[in-house]
Length: 243
Image 1 (cartoon, rainbow, N blue to C red):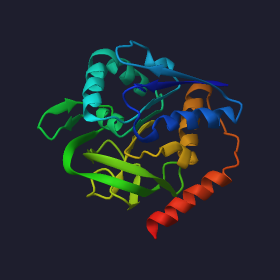
Image 2 (spheres, one colour; image 1 turned 90 degrees about the vertical axis):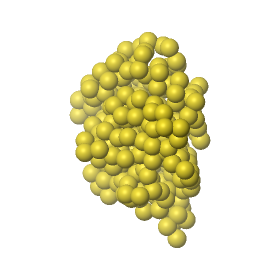
Image 3 (cartoon, helix red, strand yellow; image 1 turned 60 degrees about the vertical axis):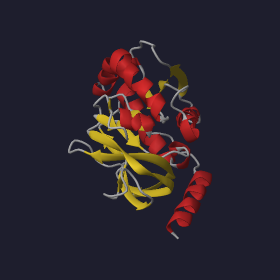
Image 4 (cartoon, rainbow, N blue to C red; image 1 turned 30 degrees about the vertical axis):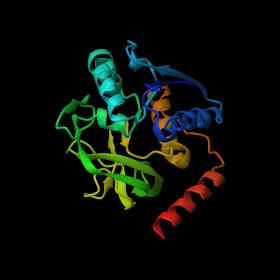
């Protein structure tokens, strides 16, 4: 078995250790003797994203998002839409999450057009939402917690076609109002969680890997790994945040 992972815009969208998500995907695959090739995909590169097995896009500042939004619209947009339609799993964090929606309205009133892959819209807020965050999710079919760190001024609102990644137990989430964080639509996960998300939440990592492998090879059963260390660290953060 072999997986090809595409890391979109690593030079522009890599806040707060977002690159660690790609490292976690690669390592948890390699520990199961699954071959992995990680390829960086930058601005102005025309690529067939449907040829990848898994895609990741991280977070960045507003000026970087404007650059990426233009590149998505003029260079990679159709390719990314085709990949998503074909079931390629995609994880998008913070700025990348916002750009997959319909639009991001800046504090100036200017609207940065999104790709429309996710049924979400985002507006700039006056106050940043910062701190550790804990969610309860049923992404994998059973209730579990998700931990991480959020730092964003955008307020994201979900449409009818998308489900939240989870219910906020501690922290702000998408907009600090409706009690939800992130979104899931098909094989796409969008989230504001940095810190980075996947090393702290190996079950989400394995969900993405399973989706990628099943798309390529059919039904699979991932080999169990010893996650005692990861689980201990996870529970420390849960207790610290909820106490």
